[in-house]
Length: 98
Image 1: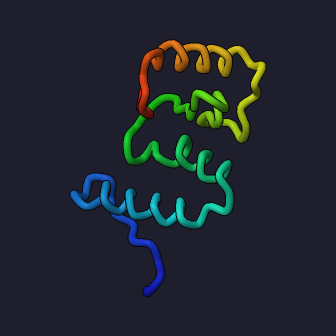
Image 2 (image 1 turned 90 degrees about the horizontal axis):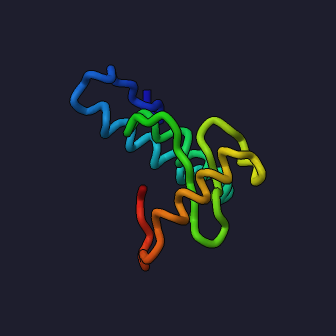
């Protein structure tokens, strides 16, 4: 059994910790920044449920969207998310989670 991931029922009190440990293992195993960004927006749902996730930064814009391999820069949803994030972070000097 050594080296096998522990699987717990979602109702078990240790389940969130197990999810966090699995996510940290997957993050360390990521071979590139785009792979890590994909993991952030797609695999974190089991830790904190959400409908859609987006990773955006003020320089590069939308870097990752949940449910897609790579965001299309000219897609209406991508443009809307970029515009919304830019508006919500006006005047902020430090990174923010929105």
